[in-house]
Length: 444
Image 1 (cartoon, one colour):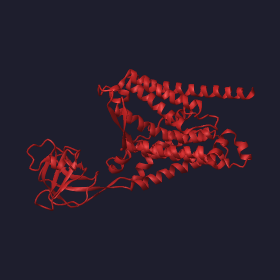
Image 2 (cartoon, helix red, strand yellow):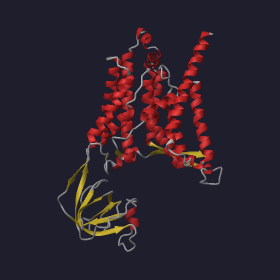
Image 3 (cartoon, helix red, strand yellow):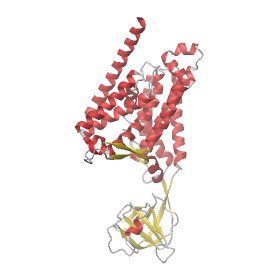
Image 4 (cartoon, one colour):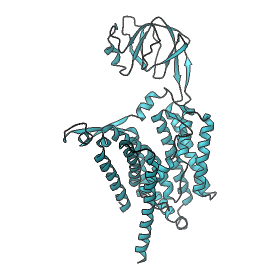
């Protein structure tokens, strides 16, 4: 491990120790889970940017590309509703605080624990999935009630009846009303994700071709991308916030959920949750963390254990010398921009699933700063030719820990950019000092 990589890990530990000493809640289980999730999301785009920086280039379009891909995902999913013209009478309603219910609420909540209301319809309405909605006419006209699924079928002696569940208290709905059902319809999420990832990769390919074939400066190419993609996202949506609504509930629960839990000592004692020094705390590991592990492993194998990876490093160190040595530098540099576009698209999808909406004018703002800062802090030289995946992840973790420390310690968030900018400037200055020192050592 390079000296600079050791330094970034030491800085990460130092930030965690100092923040924990000042405020123990910094290492609370919920905060650690959030740190892992945020580090994973920013780590993904940082790895993509690092690949470009290794070639001696830069990618300023990341934030705008994240916003554009989020908007594109919403448009490709194309959430719509199809109304069933049949009408179904309501014969019983149970709300969570209803003590006089004929059917025990515990019986219903076993299958839909998050529901607030259970509605029994006179006949079966077929398969119901989260996002479907009941349409009924109330005092103020037509109203909609979003469903979370079927609570229990055939619970009474009438086999044709069915219970549907909703997370809404549904105060305006009454027994005896007739309702219709609107079924939610959308593009299968895996197909939509594939389309968006392909689009992000194609935009990265365009960047790479403009840099390698048209011989344009990476700064200019990606700066134009920053402006164009943000503008396209705003034009596409009319500059309005767009989202998935109640669609993709099952898919979102997987992607934004947890993969496993792992134990950590001392966390409960340091956070004040327990007085015991021997108690272990189980920390949830999110799905986005697993994605980062997979991408980081592939990037590490590519850079450290493949001929193409060594050629990429050589291209960044001295592109002309690498080309004269038979390295296909144009292909490798283009591939780096494709990887950056792909990971930006992937992160755009993940952010959309986390937030459930995209604001085209602000989503992804300054994310290119975070990614570049994480890559440089992690050991990538802005001159190219040097970079380590583990260091980049540590750099992303430092950026998120700095942000979380600002929040947890109650520091005004206006200082966020000052602290991040100072960290980036310090890293660039350290990189320059180390470069000059290495040159001086070689000259001796």
